[in-house]
Image (cartoon, rainbow, N blue to C red; front, side, top):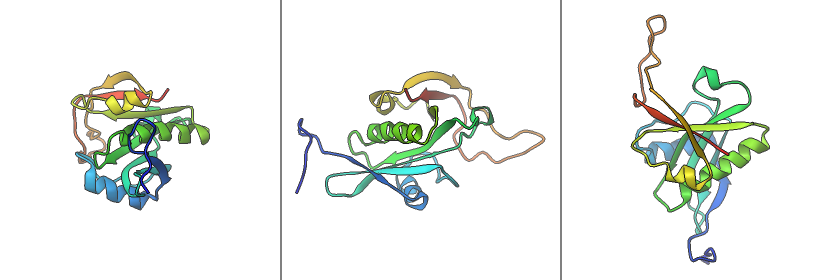
Length: 156
């Protein structure tokens, strides 16, 4: 039986996911990132039929200066394009992080991404970063992510 919200939109439900399940969806749907190696938690969003239509992976902040024990970072969000799935995931991620005792939840987007899902979930744009390479002379690395400016968002 199909259930709808009072305004006729499809009802979405947050569901728990194992990291391997979330990473499989990231592999399938994410535009520019590969799966993550670890996480603190992963959640999904399911449609009326119970099919998972999106996944979110949250973990320790990648940037060392943000890894203070009280901050988590949304590392990946990917959906099949279902309306409002991203916003549902971002809102649920903040509720999960707060329930675990975290004081701050952040994420990064590319300037070409509108941020509509984040704003819809109540997040605010707090700044930008030049998005330099992690590779330095003393510790060479291969960059596996898009370089360049990124926007920093924080859950509120």
